Length: 129
Image (cartoon, rainbow, N blue to C red; front, top):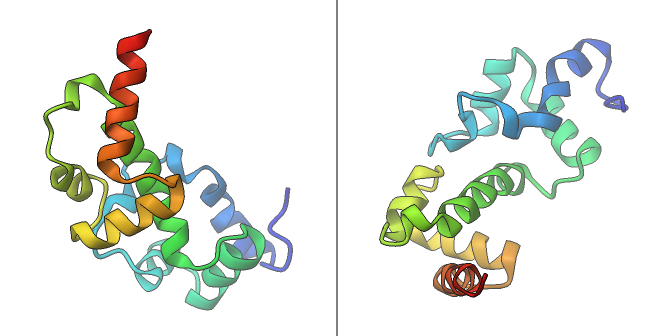
């Protein structure tokens, strides 16, 4: 699948965004990551990156794009039995959120559950198995 409308040079630079969750350096975990910083690291213009994220990848905005990866990581942390006693605020910081409020809102929007409900349900379902 090409990055239609992105142009051939940008297409090569941005194709890895489709598999960004596989990137080992966890760039998406950086609290202060902005679209400008990411565009600079990719060596592309901000408007091209924004267009790719919005139009080609289908995200509403840059925050939705980044939060998708952060929420996925948070869900893994919350369902890991080794993290049963880990504070939710610590998980928020670990996955790149700078404060608890935006983390709670993004999590509920993505999952339909609060953080504590999600964790409790995961622990209960693991216990039942």
